[in-house]
Image (cartoon, rainbow, N blue to C red; front, side, top):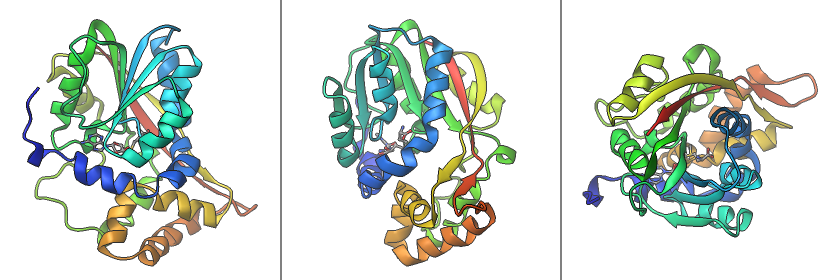
Length: 266
Ligand SMILES: C[S@@+](CC[C@H](N)C(=O)[O-])C[C@H]1O[C@@H](n2cnc3c(N)ncnc32)[C@H](O)[C@@H]1O
């Protein structure tokens, strides 16, 4: 598929998401581990399948699928994250690339997932259409996004960075754009995927102490962009202020987070 590379987000997103790859993999990524497990249970991931994680980051989901016997492929914009994914799954095939232009022939995979990834493409619908194209007809495509605002205390942490970020482009969709069930099903229908079910998974963000929490939160691409636009100190200060409300009596932190998954048929 030919795309206008100037319109895509992979170059800029790869730089930001890869800027603190080791902390992302060690701390922040695992906050979504229960979601990956629930999604694989739901689609009945079987040994021997060909699996693609589109926007695989440091490859934790790929590793879990590999441990269940899948043949794993992954694609992400951030080379630094992919280096960790390759260490975790040495037999995996990992590409640096663009979600809107997947380097695979039509019908290559038995399962394609996008865990919090399609929404970062310049055209999320273009990215999902590519996921559908490379999925075998009748196979599953899974989209994970943020849950609804009521279950998403973690949104206050991301929201605290808003004053430190460059203004979003006019009309840019917010982080909850796909959280509404009808919108999420419509997202699939628009690229001729058949929505099968939508389910929510509680996956609270937990950190043993403040230092770990700040390192984990500072490792996201959104935080990296805020750091470039302001400073690491300003980002830590914004996070620390919000974290106060989530401090537990033992000094750890627990922030509620619910993610929403759509299972669709290609
Ligand atoms: C929120 S992270 C999720 C990573 C991983 N799926 C996880 O659950 O940990 C979003 C990922 O999408 C990748 N990404 C963003 N825009 C992209 C694009 N246009 N093409 C390829 N990857 C992209 C980023 O590099 C980042 O790894």
